[in-house]
Amino acid sequence: MMTTYKASQPAPALKDLTDQVRFHGTEGKIWLEEQRMLLVQVSMMASCRRELIEMLGIERAKGFFLRLGYQSGLKDAELARKLRPHGSDVEMFFTGPQLHSLKGMVNVLPQEIDIDLDNGHFYADIEWQDSFEVENCASEHLHSEQPVCWMLLGYAISYSSFFLGRQILYKEVSCRGCGDEKCRIIGKPAEQWDDADTFMRYFQSDPIIDELQVLQVQVANMRQRLQQAAGQFYGIGESAVYRKTCSLIDKVAAGKASVLLLGETGVGKEVIARSLHLRSERAGGPFVALNCAAIPPDLIEAELFGVEKGAYTGAQQSRMGRFERAHNGTLFLDEIIELTPRAQASLLRVLQEQELERVGDSQTRRVNVRVIAATHENLENAVKTGRFRADLFYRLNVFPVNIPALRDRREDIPLLIEHFLDKLHESYGKKTLGLSDRALQACLHYDWPGNIRELENLMERGVIITDVNQSIAVDSLFPNDPPPSPSVGLTSDGRLASQTGKQAQAWIDQIFDAGINLASVEDQLMQAALDRSQQNVSEAARLLGMTRPALAYRLKKGPAEEAPGEH
Image 1 (cartoon, rainbow, N blue to C red):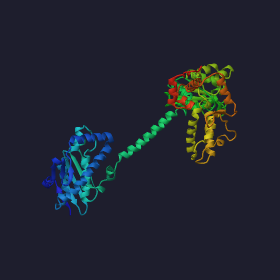
Image 2 (image 1 turned 90 degrees about the vertical axis):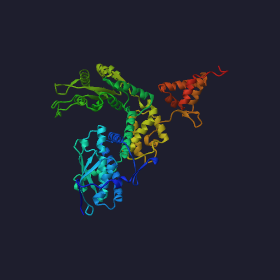
Image 3 (image 1 turned 30 degrees about the vertical axis):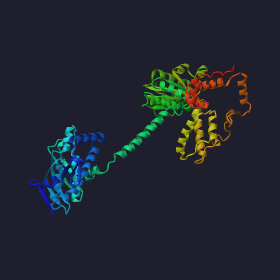
Image 4 (image 1 turned 120 degrees about the horizontal axis):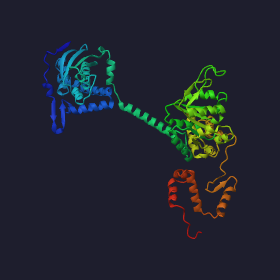
């Protein structure tokens, strides 16, 4: 049966509800029937609202307060039927709005309520006066373009839904918190609202901690990748000679000077060039690389400076060269010694004037390009023999940097091996156990004429040949003749041994014959280790096969004094 309430009708008395409120100050408790309550300042709730909005954003804060009000409404809906078991549907329903008012949250003034519990019919038109949430926003100067009575709305939705036994949804159709004249809500079954599903998402669990944890993992992974990238910015290497090279690159990277990279084939000149570009002011611009040895001599100018349509047979369309593609960036010219004399002259003009002409064209084009050149040959000798222009050499040789050969930085070999194996395991989808001890020793004593490129190729060969979960054997890397072990080493009991059987003894005899004592040998070994490691005590200790504290202690003591009786 339909029960209707109009605003002109008197509301049920509040005495039965106020009688349920009990203050037990000596116990520090306030009770509403069997529910423990709290008295809190409205200003505290205002501060809480402001901080949550700042912390979570408007939408997440709205969902939080809607769900908070929803839980409160569920508790009061249970209470309503206990307090007025014999009242009409409207009287029982009024318990919720009156409890809302009794708690000091809002003054609820129902304008119209239609309830039919048997058929699930429900309609409510309610005005809110003196909403504490409107007061919160005003006191914290929180401007809003949408209704702000979130907690009150969540309460009304859960209370009515529990009472009716079906999903009831309220909308705040006007709100003083966003500039309207009054706060007014309309409630009816959810299916009668077009956007009910969208709005009900606010009541779904919103575990922000899960999202924060995911973000923390992503940030940690990104930070780790950045740290790895920073450590590998110049490739892989911790040896003193390699770090010295990187230090030189650091000094020149920020400027505009041309850089000449010198070193054997395969030492990683392009890796260094890319790193220099990324550390420069041009990092946001293009990095263009060209191996001059890979371009036929008659096409090198077109490749560098561009070509106009019809400039020569086969030039069917105009296209820009590497210089134009590298505009506002960096151009890396590897094996620059292979440039033809004419290309060398054109390159010199571009470097000096920052302008070029395409092959077959008379139009001058401005370019802003930093050139990094590289070669494995001695350019000074090439100048003397007439293979390379002296003026171009001086223009490129503003800041020469020698990239050390792999045999000069053997302590980096294990790091490089680990790096390449990690990449190859992922690339081939198989996991080996790494190099066997003998294979590693062979790598450490091999001269690596092909340098890092040769090392990478040998690691790939080893991964291809070796079965899953097996160690890479020395014959997988060096199938013909593995590199010989060092001519002088240590036996298992710590004595010097050599392949010749006589070399170690010859060294010992020379030391004795020269009258050199043990302290002098130790001092010279320590000093040699420091010189070789560029005064890096930790690296010197590794070279000597001792701990850093032990070496530091010996260095602090200074040269050993001659024992009494010795002369």
